[in-house]
Image 1: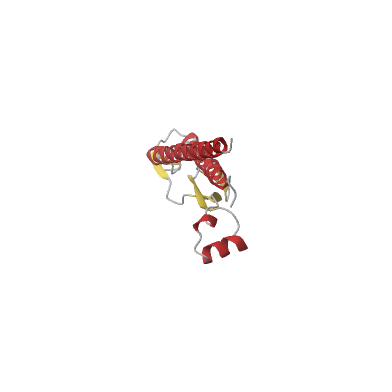
Image 2 (image 1 turned 90 degrees about the vertical axis):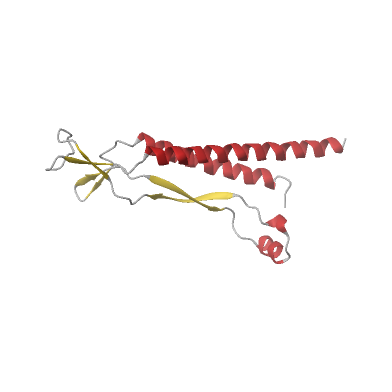
Length: 151
């Protein structure tokens, strides 16, 4: 285990939370986009995107050996973004007969983006980002204090 392992874990979490915030912002920006993708000759509205994260790092011999010996030091490897998935919930139907994308009955399909969900996701990502910055600073200060002991 490197002395910088804690910093690497926090850095990977900062990267992942930043991507989560960007995804929530993109969802909010496309909340009214009715022509996102052409499917079978018909325009489909924007679908909400969500980030899926998983523990980072490749399992190595050292991690298995550390786990078998009961050593907790070899377990932390950070987090990584495994994929971005689309929300398959139905689109919202709104009656707007004057809209260019309205169907024969006058209804328009709008994206399945809920601004409240996006704000909650954005706040969670922001809090997690702040917590990781605090952990990063704490680790940095511990390393600086260790260097002062060596003087």
